[in-house]
Image (cartoon, rainbow, N blue to C red; front, side, top):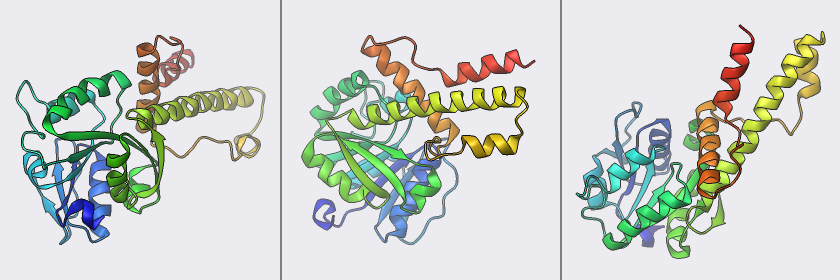
Length: 260
């Protein structure tokens, strides 16, 4: 990692709890960290290896930048702006930008066309597990993109947990989206089974016991699960796939209306 960073800081930009967890974990591993907290980011504890920064100073000083921003429009504004460069205005030569958000292959392609002109290599990564797992280095990380850039990104992301390479750019977000889709479907089916079991007179204790198994959904943040299921629907639309990709929020709302 030392050669890749050349004794320069690791940059982190975030607007939710994942950004702060990532910055705190990297700083706890005794690496100098520059963290730019955007609107929506929770307070963080700054250690001696962690510095308050903004996105422009992160871009100017860090050879690798981890961006934990789910919303594509916010991410686009961050890296491109309205015709005027933002975070990529004066990047280090060969900067690696790690996108930890939720993008479709089409959205990646649009970003790459701009970033390549600015000497920035984009890779995509997905954190499997919540902020707490990330903060303690126990997350699973999916990682996709150019092999040379992925090797640099992996040297940093391995501080957060176990890294699994998934293939070309966009593959990590796609894999995480499919995982979210399967787990969302599982969560909906489980809730329906609980309601049916209750109607059949089964006690909550009995239902908990008989439905408990290793095949139960992963312990995922509900918001994170919904985001990944939503990304799966967007990918399906882009690829002209099925329009029936499960909508977790819609399923829950429909059941709530039925129970009124």
